Image 1 (spheres, helix red, strand yellow):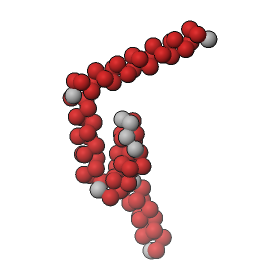
Image 2 (cartoon, rainbow, N blue to C red):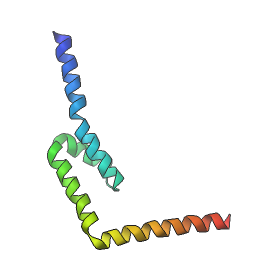
Image 3 (cartoon, helix red, strand yellow):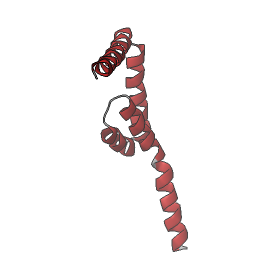
Image 4 (tube, helix red, strand yellow):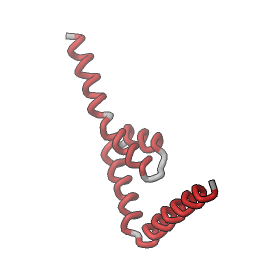
Length: 87
């Protein structure tokens, strides 16, 4: 009986860890701190996920932010090509 409760508790923690991991991964892929958002995902699981989605959506719907991201990507590609040409 004790083993059953122990295994079910571990299973619950593993299942409950999915949302904080997803929140941390999304945050890290958009340049935010993985560990901060992972901790927020443990403390406020649903709320932190929707706050992060709101922050990401704000960046995607802001035309200036999208242009800035595209310009950074173009500049990084041009710099990598310039480094290859110099070698």
